[in-house]
Length: 190
Image (cartoon, rainbow, N blue to C red; front, side, top):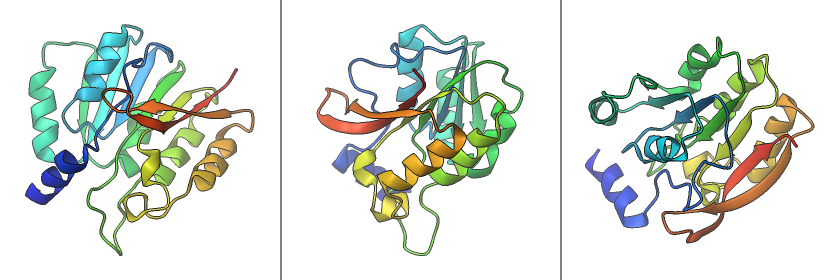
């Protein structure tokens, strides 16, 4: 665990939507994979456009910290588990469009293990009856690397188009201070 945290801090890799935040992607629900330190939840709250905020965290330490940090908010739900098989349980009864912030992946990645649940997450989104969700995927700089299990941008686009072939794809800035150009993939329906 120490080395994972050291890597995250040394390379500044965590949930960073950029200074514009989530306000341009309003939906009733906000669903995040990879809670980590709760920054994504904070940005969703700051946007002020989501009635419910849900987040999934695999590491018990971060899950407990987030539950404690956001315990006074009745519209925030922190879920413990692996998003590769937990996401569906959270979204299956949601009856309105969702803004997804997909940011669950391992640092540093390990050869021979699943480091990134993105394909599994997109499969679960595909099962949902609504096909017009907004999908934001963080850390595009990890595409084609072990951190994303060598999943490429083209692989992600192909999987997103299985959900709805009318999705438009563009890339937006990420990082705390907009320093990560085109680091977030945005899939949306016009």
